[in-house]
Image 1 (cartoon, one colour):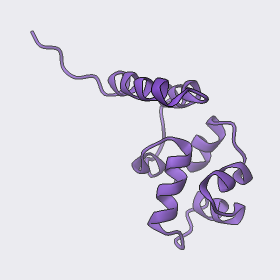
Image 2 (cartoon, helix red, strand yellow):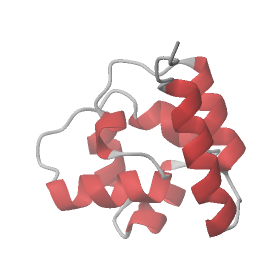
Image 3 (cartoon, helix red, strand yellow):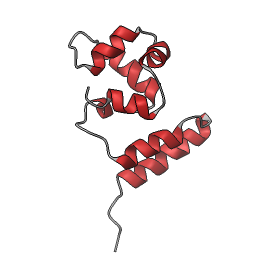
Image 4 (cartoon, one colour):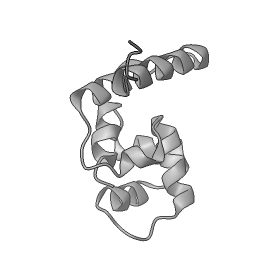
Length: 100
């Protein structure tokens, strides 16, 4: 999970912080960041949810600066504002072709 450390740090979290949020231990987060193979899909989902990213984001080769900026900007929003922010972020990162 190449992006896990990058996303965690972009959110200003330590491995201990993320472990507490995801209901696991720091060694598990460390193993995940190192690419260990003994992590369950359930734990991967919990970690992704804790970080506010889709599961696939943990497996990408890298993230753009724009994606990291959007993650940072969304921290601390209310659930309503976060939902709106996700919609805007999706439009920015995945623009649809304009109708002519």
